[in-house]
Length: 293
Image (cartoon, rainbow, N blue to C red; front, side, top):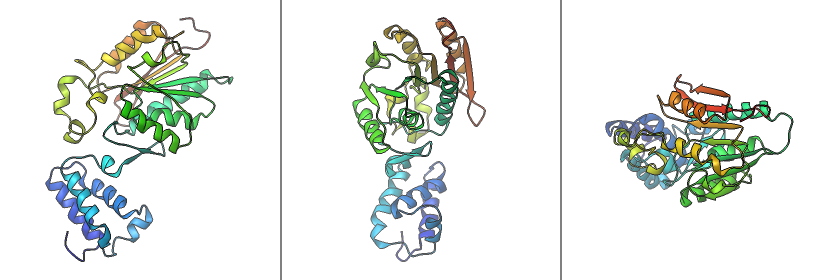
């Protein structure tokens, strides 16, 4: 970075540098980092473009761009990611929330509003919560629900607990393997975005995912379906199967997951939800109160 640059010139230089380093979406990443370093967003960010780059932010800016060029996700550099309009702290202990997961939350809420329209207590759990994005969003949008969240990572649960507090919601956080921490608990709604990448495919992921996001949040076993099988086996730990199960999954896995839910025999309705790109991204199993398991 040269002395006397405008904010716009610093952005252009960083974008070009990131592109040469092979960074995916270099312009978007440069903008995210510049907004963060300058502490300005939206119209204020664009108004500041012709202004001289503040010298007091120079070292922070150079550090952020260098880290991004080395492959670190911008969200970890910034320390946050928005999900469903809510702010979430993210660290290397948690998977970065993705926009497609918002569609899973929407689908679960839609089915829940249909099944539980009469009111009464609804107990929902988010398994493999990571940053707490799903659990916190459900608790925010349905404050009358009792929401729990589990993760095998104590470090992830610490991040999720901070996100719950920052967004003003109460969540029952439990540490353990998938459904095990909720043994004996009532669960009406089970939501999970578990690890679903086949182990052999991890080496071929984008470097910023493969090298920086937690492997435990990525590796779904030999075919990517191991966590789903285990959760369905662990249903015997609960007093009764949930009336709604909602899973996020990888490309090409929807039919296999739907078959697993059908074989379990608890959910007469199996719903496949595509993401905005048309990829079958979520599978829901639904059972009304009148439908016998």
